[in-house]
Amino acid sequence: MALSEFQLFRPKTIQSAVALLAQHKGDIQVLAGGTDLLPSMRQKLFAPKYVLDIRGVEELKRIRVLAGGGLEIGALVTLSQIEDSEFIRRNYPVLRKAAMTIASPILRNMGTIGGNICLDTRCLWYNQSYAWRTSCGFCIKKDGSLCHVAPGGSKCWAVFSGDTPPALLCLGAEIEIAGPGGTRRIALADLYTGLGDTRLKIAKDEMLTRVFIRESMSGYRGAYQKLRVRGSIDYPLAGVAVIVKSSGRHAPVQDAKVAITAVNPSPMLVVGADHALIGRAVDEHIATVVGELAARTAKPLTTSALTPEYRREMIKVFAKRAVLEAAAG
Amino acid sequence: MKKELIELRVNGRIHELAAEPNKLLLDVLRHDLGLTGSKRGCDDSSCGACTVLIDGIPMLSCTLLAASCQGQEITTVEGVAEHGGLAAIQQAYGRWGGAQCGYCTPGFMMTVKYLLANNPDPSEEEIRNALSGNLCRCTGYEQMYQAIRDAIEAERKGLAASSR
Ligand SMILES: Cc1cc2nc3c(=O)[nH]c(=O)nc-3n(C[C@H](O)[C@H](O)[C@H](O)COP(=O)(O)OP(=O)(O)OC[C@H]3O[C@@H](n4cnc5c(N)ncnc54)[C@H](O)[C@@H]3O)c2cc1C
Image (cartoon, rainbow over all chains, first blue to last red; front, side, top):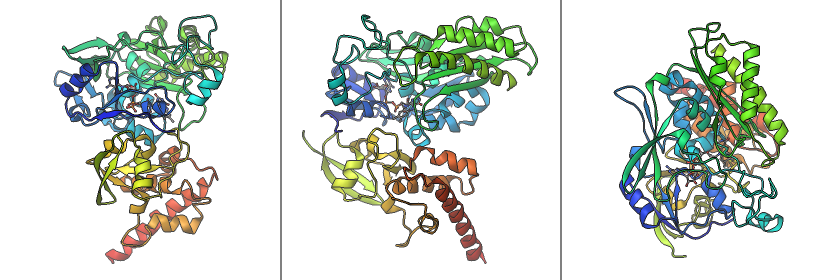
């Protein structure tokens, strides 16, 4: 399948990238690793007039330990770089564990953390060739006006299917967004709208430039569990990230967070999971309670080849397993 | 669409050619440069048959714009042979039947080349993990693992022989 026609820009600096975004606002699309965007362009889900290949912006390719503590990750840092970072393995293991499950080793050499955070949402009715969509019916998210997943509804339920955002939500990550007026910094949790179609609160002339994790979030043990069809390649159909801080395996939990992905239009923190865990030593019972809380946060619909019931059940199972794994270290 | 002049460095040689901005690296390699070793398999970025090295790192040439690869060193399976002869891993694939229909083999070669360049003595698990992004529909994986171990052994013997 051929790509639509476009003009390609390859800026070397954030300033020139943002200037091009502003100049061609609405007609231009950011290309980082391209592992999500190019397959979608082949399916005619996007046909931008201009493509902004930002891979020439060298300053966004670094993982930097900040002088005052904490970590800065440039938007163009690849998932392989995250996997290979000794600092991340030691201090923020949940992020590495989530990154290591993404796609395949080859795709991780290409895919970036920025692209993973800004990933398009996915649905059985959307991620299909143009011929498929012409014959089976267009949908709200692209070219049509109705939803096949929740008939009668006007909301798009396409699912956010990135693996690092739940880990980053647990870690309370912040992101830097650059636009014509300069940069702004927000909590990652505030990036997502909860809608499948207009998924990100980022303006058409803005781009994600960096991710920040505070030093106080280092030293948490972490686990990431994920459901997918083919173990070495596919997108998640359910995913759970857990972080736990305690002085030992049987010691009471001092702090904890749980987040889920691939079962809602946005990645979500599981509200109340921290309260269920803090002050107690983790055991099967508490892990089961957290599993139930996570399953209640999940709102899967028929957006993928596996049934919603199964995916919700697997969120419960995986949350329990991930809590036990994180607590065990 | 208007073609633009681009310059690509492939297997150590510089090529100047005119290509549309939306042209994929795989198509330029196969159609413009006649390097048909890299294959189009799935066309949805999941099979690895089109794998090439970009600055030494395995990437999918079906998921890269050719124009985006300017200034980088591109290595295809045609660039794997050493001094006009087959590389140790290519010979070992031949000895062990690591290639059946052969369609996926060029992609595997690039992945294995990268693996052994960065980890000359990988464990079984590291080999399996490294190869997990390349699909073989003949499912000849066992023979490939044997070929890789054999190539490592051959390399080791060669080194021992040359240091004698
Ligand atoms: C076969 C296959 C399997 C996959 N499996 C997984 C998986 O298991 N888990 C998973 O999480 N992902 C998976 N992916 C998707 C993808 O490889 C990763 O999510 C990757 O991190 C995306 O990053 P990228 O740089 O390639 O993004 P791109 O494709 O370059 O971009 C993705 C989207 O984000 C936007 N974007 C990118 N960077 C920025 C930025 N800095 N600012 C603003 N917008 C930006 C783009 O415009 C585009 O809309 C898979 C892809 C394939 C082809």
